Image (cartoon, rainbow, N blue to C red; front, top):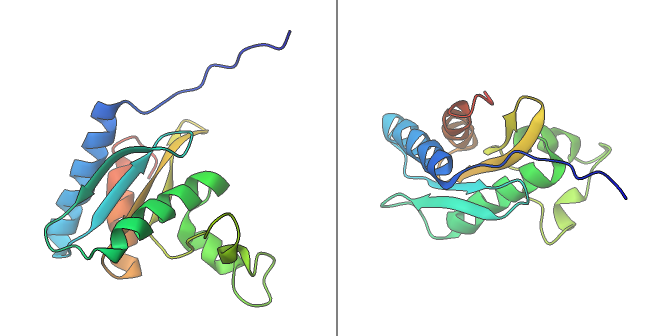
Length: 141
């Protein structure tokens, strides 16, 4: 019989703290964002849509988080490998739509990926800053 592996997970309380930190950063930047926190299995754990955040970016925030968790890489880094001529060109049309814009960040407990945060609603730079602020709560950034 195979050994059972224990994995870390994100509590709902921690997920909400990450959302709160991300929203605080978005307010500091003066941008209205959607913030999604996913657990280690890629399932939605916490979400916030700031007043004024655009409707299409709800799904984009969740897909950034999913992409980041599925590949255990920041979406801004994955986007560099997804350009024409690069090794992963075309990845954006796989797996039901991989999102390769900045703003998706894996959440780490030590070296173990325990989830991801995805942010959308601002520029790529703003989305990344807001995602990093949320990830900092768990010590990922």
